[in-house]
Length: 150
Image: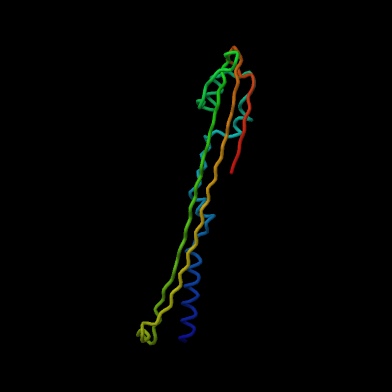
């Protein structure tokens, strides 16, 4: 009977330890930001068109980081976005059990314990540069973009 009780107790301990330790991937998913209002290549490809007004561009992309002019004094808008995402995750868990024999603890405080821990971290940087060139009437005449992730 004692062996069966100890085996059952250890089985529960192992199960609780496994359930208590979350993976690094699950921690990363819990802290990631899915902000849908940010500037993306897809937004530029889908929304920006030659012939758009500056007001329409601003309503889609927001305010540019840099406004300058070219050699013919036509406006050029530059959107230069950099993002850094850092994630750190750690998990630890443990189980301690005190073994009883006939209602009293085993001499010497007999017990078993188990603990485990794991951790991970990652850093990702993304850049997006969008250049929008306007004609002399203030309409988009050309645009280009560059995106990188490392």
